[in-house]
Length: 414
Image 1 (spheres, rainbow, N blue to C red):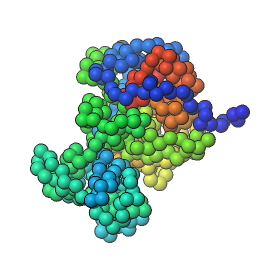
Image 2 (tube, helix red, strand yellow; image 1 turned 90 degrees about the horizontal axis):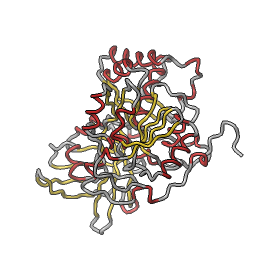
Image 3 (cartoon, rainbow, N blue to C red; image 1 turned 30 degrees about the horizontal axis):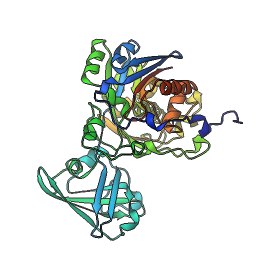
Image 4 (cartoon, rainbow, N blue to C red; image 1 turned 135 degrees about the vertical axis):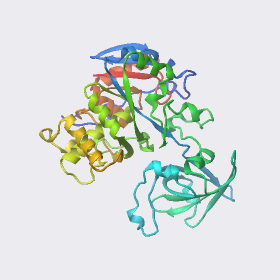
């Protein structure tokens, strides 16, 4: 029997038949189905109708991160294949103690030339000795490129990549050397076409290892229809990490260790949100995560907390409601900080963990795909619409919706 206030993993499971998982995208991005949930009612529509189904004056917020080909393979002389799955770039300098290494802004890492240090997941790790350097030769449109990799810190899974010609940026190099890291549940190797289809049409800022998949359905035609209805939008950047696929393994879901992701906010973002404060619709769980995090960053600034631009998974639940600032007050605190420090943008890190009981601050609804059973994304949806998520998912399964990254879409308006 579930105790009051308990959040058990079993409460957020459902049976997802393998055949309901969309392993490939539809030929046309906006041809997907769209389940609309509004005021407790469910309708079945098509994604091309989204602009006319959104509430009047809706302000959509997109995540314009771009997936990088983050999977690299090196073959040893023995024939053993070592796979690197790059996760986060790290800042290094000769006088920096390795225990003090911190994440580097991903935009800077993309501009790096000659060498770069990344934290990664290493496949076949036991076959790669701590003092061993791996090398591969790439034949590219710009000529021969030599890529080497060595351990920078074995215990912390940090690797140093070096390449010649050193004039190439890391962003250029990774396009030649890497493969797109498809979600593990697709259970297939990436193809050349995934380099296009596993990106949104508005992807711009390189650095994600997973796509903000709610945005995969948007096309120029849909954006034109939004404009014709007078619906405005904005883009922020949250670089989606591999932790988005990390399963919850704790019986009490609140004991799960939530991953942290890098997000970039601009002065323009904050001004636009202030101008549309009552009509913000997140496109995707990553946009929702970034938007809600912004409120709590403002709260940290107002409460003079240390490290205001690093948000852990607990902070949103530690402040009692009487201590919650107004939404405008919180956003203005961030804007004032940016203006006073003469910064157009700020890089933040968010580990926010949105579970049932969370009170949403900025987001009035979401456009999102259908997510894995027992995932942190299901918890986020349950936080927004309560137990009705079970009814929605049941209807979607009964009506043969396609699930997960390349699947169909929903518009959820509590």
